[in-house]
Amino acid sequence: MNSKNIKIIKIEKTIQNKDIYNKTRIQLKIYASSPDIKTKQDKESAGDRINYNVRKSICTSFNTENISNKLYNPSFTPHYSFTTTNVQWI
Image 1 (cartoon, rainbow, N blue to C red):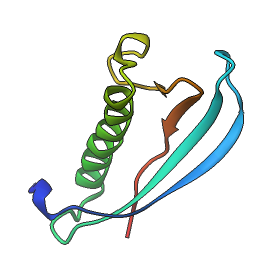
Image 2: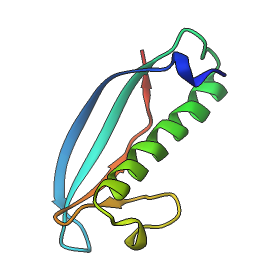
Image 3: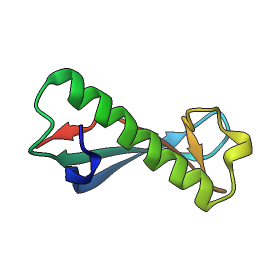
């Protein structure tokens, strides 16, 4: 699998109620495409990596790595918590 051939098409957000930390929950859905990723197993594996890196990037950007778990799920900002759904392959 060559990650250089993965293209993020779009990211949608769904704003939800407050979570147990009193932060507004936002669920992200990422749409991706790749001519090289064809099997269900490869799509799930690549999708997990994409979601992990999106959540990690949020934590790194807001210096909140210390209040999330090792999978950065959920990831936090001062006012929001983010989760991700399965990547939708187009």
